[in-house]
Length: 362
Image (cartoon, rainbow, N blue to C red; front, side, top):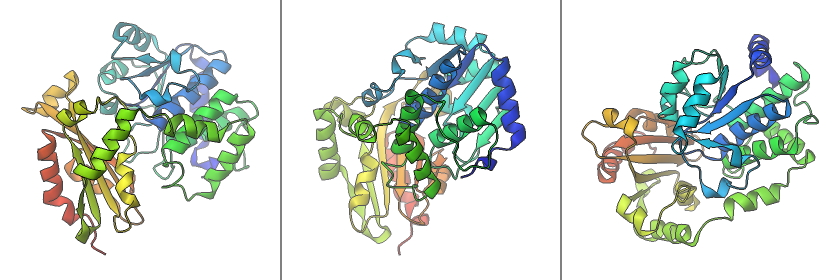
């Protein structure tokens, strides 16, 4: 990925927005994952280093294993500080949106975002971005939004350059650490969607900037609770279903089962990847029942619950089309997500009714 991915006119427009702004709000998606946290916190630290007034708002609570990230104590969780967040959104003169492609992915924050006519910049790598931003930097070929943030900040700092990746010399360690975290988590520690030579050039720059990659890995992947480990064991032993003819696996969890294991935000992270370690499994789907948020009730109709769904696959076996066609979702070819309004049993039946039309037998 080269910096000419960013047209010069878009970069100049972003530069202009930044120079005129004094109250910037950064937004990212519901249930923030590592890339959402990394890309938004990197922008937050960089703007603070420039002396700019900036706030970072996330729709709901993030997993506890991101609590170590620099600047996390400054994050405003909308569910917990709604009045304060609404005031900041109303006063913003620029909004930077990372790692989501349409307003519905930020939940209740979307209405407040759209009410403010201030300029908005979208930095994302998901398919089919909605037309709500004044400048859209959308590149589905990018492994992560954090990588796009790296390229944008490098470009803004050093003007447009023919060099593949300008140095991070003016960016501080907090920015570099956040970007690395987002890149690492959105590729499963560089195990999928990561066969891009330029990505490793960026990683080298981040390590040169002082990132301790081993410490970041340990903080994210070796910080689970005992309940989470028992939940994983239960999923693999009691809940995993294999469909050998189509090389597929399915794991489903009800809210009752989650309660049994004292489920906390983030405890389901990575479970969808585990069936892919089986020699003949090429597709994996993980479903978990969740409560409806107030803003979702109209969309849900008569449903009392929703189901959050994750898909993973290997090689040239896309799952994003299946996610889009039947589960109101989408994403990357090998890593996608969606949702279903109803029970987890109903969502599983929808999967069973249609997966054979999308998953290859060879």
